[in-house]
Amino acid sequence: MSTPPTTSSPEEPTSNADRATLEAASSRRTFAIISHPDAGKTTLTEKLLLYGGAVQEAGSVRSKSRGREVTSDWMELERRRGISVTSTALHFTVGDVTFNLLDTPGHRDFSEDTLRVLAAADSAVMLLDGAKGVEPQTLRLFEVAKARNIPLLTLINKYDRPGLDPLHLLDHIEETLHLKPTPLTWPVGIPGAFRGVIDRRTGSFHRFERVAGGSKIVPTTILTPEEAAATEGEAWATAQEEVELLDAIGANHDHESFMAGETTPVFFGSAVSNFGVGLLLEALMELAPAPAPHIDVDGGHRPLQAPFSGFVFKIQANSDPRHRDRVAFLRICSGHFERGMKVINQRTGKPFTMSYAHEVFAAERSALEEAWPGDVIGVVNALDLTIGDTLYAEGPVEFPPIPSLAPELFAFARNADTGRVKQFRKGLQQLDEEGVIHLLSRVNGDPTPVLGGVGQLQFDVAQERMKTEFGAAIRLEPTPYTTARRTDETGEAALKHHSQAEVLVRTDGTRLAVFQSPFVLQFFQDRNPDVLLDTMLTR
Ligand code: G4P
Image (cartoon, rainbow, N blue to C red; front, side, top):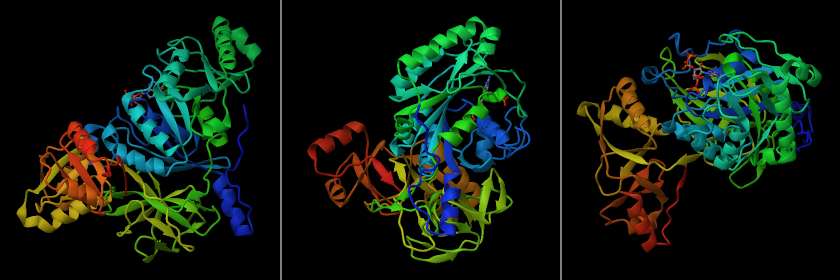
């Protein structure tokens, strides 16, 4: 196993301030968790916070069963459906390492949100249910992470209960994701009679203790191989044989291929029993990359110690009913952030003062005085910020736009209350800026706005928020379109008189060619091979 470098920054510091920035950056780990709903993401998040010392007792972020106030689920709709719609940035420190955990919505319909969050993460933990393996939403999110080429660590969760055979799980991961698993821990005991794991780096045995709820840190009993052989008998011998097999097939961690997104170190655990959480945190400290110089639109790299810069990857409005506000989440790419500093929005060229930057912890906020590359800050009430905006203090820079998915569902949005035209327009525009839906207009003269998205829940959220936040009830009517591609003026001209397709224009001027079926798209494409029809969009 190769040893990772402790910092990803190749630059030489030239001053004390530079040194401080590079040091702070090298101690940051900014990551997200991707999983299928119910695999245990909320549980794991809580346990990471518990082990990271950010909460004294797990259960404070959310508890489904006890019906407690759901602090990271803030909308009525979320509460009713019991799903987490919004992303939250959690910041905690373990020893010398500062973690930024970017929460991603698990539901398929919010994949666009996840795409944006992953644009701000340097690595991700892929969480699998040990009884289910790779599920549909894991696959979808994995593809999103793959497109970003970020390194992935894998935690196979719920190993306290009957699940799939570990060797079978490895095959399954490799076959489904074309990603080579390289276990760093290996389970002892058959699924359903889990005894603990072998730490393949040291050969020691971490004994599994079943705990109820695991609201407090559980000390781990670690045994030497000899002690484990004596206490675990046959289960230990079998696990040893399997580890030898892993060695023989070369399923060993290799830092280069991990960083290239070709292999994934695998851990086995039980988040509910706190088992494996400490090992995962250690792995994140040791293996997950620190922030590296961020690539700009011209392909150059913004050095970490360059003056402050960052980009907006998420906008969240009215998240706290006590303060009607709008928070722009910014990932810092370079320099040292200090509250009150003046920055420039690259898109508009306008300067503004970041007086109200916040560190965000679920729904709790605390004013943030300083932050460093890799950190995520919430800028409160910076009304003219939109997703993808670059901010910088000095030395102009523009970071690449954030990718978004081509919508697959479209609906006409009709104003149900003609007395509230202003609110109707304002609400739709705001939801578009936040990336809740794509706001589109027709080029055929019909002024009815069209909403686009990848899942029905996006439309439900839009409808609910239009009513509750903007006082503008909307009626959504289906359109015949199911497939969209990004196009240009030539595409618009070619589709002008088409009976089963048309062009819709997004608020930022992006043209979307929409088709009634993939077949119609294919037919058009065959006849017009030179017309731009791209699946990737940006914000
Ligand atoms: P999600 O955010 O990915 O949707 O999953 P969440 O953490 O809410 O976990 C889904 C269910 O799986 C929860 O049970 C949770 O307790 C359980 N779970 C999580 N990790 C483990 C684990 O390691 N082992 C086992 N056996 N179960 C686990 P629930 O009944 O839906 O909620 P609750 O009543 O336990 O709160």
